[in-house]
Length: 320
Image 1 (cartoon, rainbow, N blue to C red):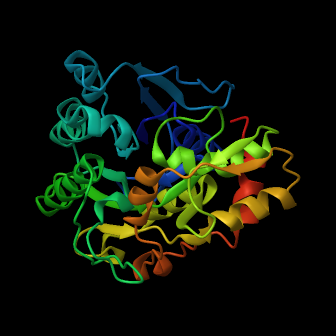
Image 2: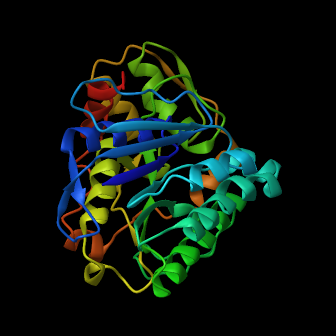
C-alpha cells in the first residue's frame, strides 16, 4: 500500500509518519488492512527520514508545492492514500493571498486530478472555516463562513474533496482541527502557535507575556489526538461519513488561566506575564469555543480529557 503525506516535516507530519510506521497497515483499496509498502514524504523543509531494516520504501519530495516542477514530481508518485497536511497559515496567507492559494489550494486540486483508482484522501481542515455569529456549540453541519484567507482556503478544499468524492475520483474526508498543542521549538508568528507558547515557554523554563486575557476560552487538542483522529477517519467506511464528508475533531475548551495552571502542575519554571494583543484577541474570539461532532463520536474519536493530558502528550513527544 502506497501512502503520501504532505507537510511531512511539520510536527503533525512527523507524528503521523511515526504512527503509521508503528502501525504498519491501513485499510487499502481492497477494503481490508494492507501492509504499508511505500511512504512518500513531501515538504518544503528538511524531512526526517526514518531508518530501519524492516521499514517500507521511503521516498522524499522536497520543495515548495507552489513550484510547478515540485508539484509535478509529487503528482507522479502514485498513492493509495493521501494525508494532506501541508498549508500556509493565517499570518502569511493574509499578507499574500494569491501566493497562499498556490500553496493551500492548487496542490490539492492537482493531486486529485492525478489520482488513480479512487484513493482515500484525508485532509487536515480547520475551525477557521467558521465565522460570523456562532452558536454556543459548533456541529459538523454548520455552514462555513470563513473570516480569513486561510479559512477560505480550507473551506474551498473541503468542497473540492466532497465534489471529487461525489464524482468517484477519490474517497475523501476532511477533519476540522481546533488549535493543536503543543508544537515543539521556538514561537512562530502565527496565532495558533502564540497560543501554544503560553504553555510551551514556561514548560521549557522561558518567561513569556501572554497575549490573551486569562478568561479567554480556546478550543484545543493534543497532537496525539489529532493523529488518532486522522487515522480513525481514514479507516472509517464511507457510510459513516456526513454528506459533506467534513467533520469536526472534538475539542477541549480551556481558558488561558487553565493552561497556565496546568503548566505549573507539570513543573513549569518560566514566568507568565501579560501583554494583551487586541488584534490577536479578536481573531481568537472569532473562533468557536465548543467544537463537537456526532460523526466523530461515532468513530470513537474523543477530545483530550484535560489540559494536563495535552501537556503530557507534548512532554512525551517533543523530540519527534
